[in-house]
Structure formats: C-alpha cells, structure tokens
Amino acid sequence: ADKLACLLLCVYMLPVALATVAFTDHAPIPLWPGVPPGERTGATGHETEGCETPGVPVSRCVDRSISNVTVPTLTPYLVAGATSAVVIAPGGAYKFLSWDREGTDIAAWLNSVGVSAFLLRYRVPGRAWLPFGSAPLMDAQRAVGLVREWAADGRAPGLNGSRVGVIGFSAGAHLAGHLSVAWRSRSYPRVDEADARPCRPDFVLMIYPWESVTEPPVSAGPDAASALNVTSRNPPTFLTQTEDDAAHVENSLYFYLALKKAGAAPSELHVYPEGGHGYGRCTKPTVPKGLAVCSWPHRAARFLQTLGVLPLL
Image (cartoon, rainbow, N blue to C red; front, side, top):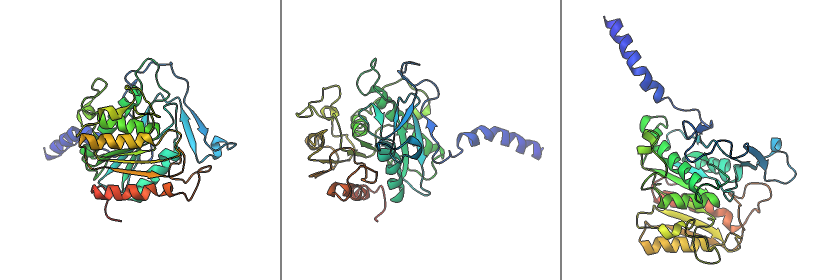
C-alpha cells in the first residue's frame, strides 16, 4: 500500500515537476506557443543574419544583425544567485536587430555585475497591417510577463519578480519607453498564466532612444512618441545619448523632461558631447573607443545600485 501511494504521488507530481524544470542557459525560448498575435504567416521573408562589420562573413562575425524575425524568442543568460533580471531589446530602426552589439554583449555586461539577462528577439521589420511598433510591444509585454512567471514557478531560481527591468538601444530604447507607458493592459488576447503577470518594468534603461518625442528635430508622430503618455506611474528611467547623435539627443532630453513634469520616479539623464549613434558598449569593430560616452555602463550600474537591483560594487 505504501509503495502504491508513493507511485500515485509521483505520478501526480510529475506534471508539476516538468512545469518547473529550469530551462537551458543561452538557449532561445519561443515567446508564443503558436503563431504570434497579429502575425500573417508567410507575409515576412525568411530570417537572415548579417554582419555589421563591412567585409566580414557571418561565419566569422562578432557583430551580427538579424532580419525578418517572425518567431520571437527570449534567450536566458542567468547568473547563479541573481535576484534581478533585465530584458534586453536590441535596436535596428524596427528593420533589423543589432544582435551582438546591443544584445549578447549587453547580456555579458549585465552578468558581469550580477544581473541575469533575457535577450529579446522581437519581430522586425514593422508589419504594414499593424500600427507603428505594435508587434514589438506585444513581444515585450509577453517577455516581461514570462520572466515573472518563470521567477514564480522556479524556472529562474532566486529571481525576484519585483526586480525585472528592461534595457533598450535605439529602436529598442523606443520599445522600452513604449512599454514603460503601455503596461496597464495587454495589447493582445490572453494566452496563458504569464499574461496574468504584470508587464510594467520595475526600471528602464533607454540608451540613445529613437522616435520617442514629438518635439523637433525628432518630430515623431503621436502614434510613436511614447513621451506623450508618460505619467507618475512610469518606472525609474536611465537615459543616455550624445549631442552629435543623428537620431537626435532631444529624444532623451524631452523624455526626461516629460518624466519630471509628470512627477515620475527619480530618474537619470546623461548627455555626452560625441559618440554618434549605435555604439553599444564601445566593444565592437568600427565603434570608436575611449570616448566619454563609453562610460555609460558604469553610470548605469550605479543607477541600478541606487534602486537596490544590484549590490554595491
């Protein structure tokens, strides 16, 4: 009887055990169980990789880009014992993803300061049949909900679901800003329990944001300019940009001003004289080294310390 009871208990607990098995580090996890919401099968070309270093084949590239994403994923980069995590949104003008410069390299930096990372492969290019930024927003909302679900069910051991932030670069910074004002309800029908989790980031880092304000010379339309929808509920935000950025430093200036006017959580703005656009952490080929703006990760780490997201270094 005891053996039978034990067998029945094991059979009963098996689905629970399977549901909470930790996933494989660095292995991409599909965001959606089927076709993503709003997607039209076959309407976008095949996913391809390129190299952002001229003349270097993809097989030897350390600065890859990804185009035509139709199957969005999250790739975990976990730190043992980490209680905080950041979802990474690479840039690429919503046309491609700057995968290494603004993705894998950023995961390595976050891991180095004791924070787990989840690299988001969101849908690009824009879907002509959807409003501006809609597919990336769905993917980002889903991503934050999934990370919190994994924190709750043990698949991300030790992670605190109240310490989940987002960092974005260029268009990815636009996405981070968009999510910071569009979290009250999902922009797609509920799929599972992950969509019952909050998708408001606990903190946001916007690195050289793009198309985020209506003020000139940016002059983004109201459908794109997330600064128009900033409220006192916006999470603490870290912004950085250079004065010679072709995407315009006014994105950061006016977004920060919107945060202040709304009475949002204390945030930080760091402006540097030069560096252009798309430099990531200044670690990749073709990116200038030694500029003052290359110190932004140190500033960002201190910002995260003030929030209690990572320990004092």
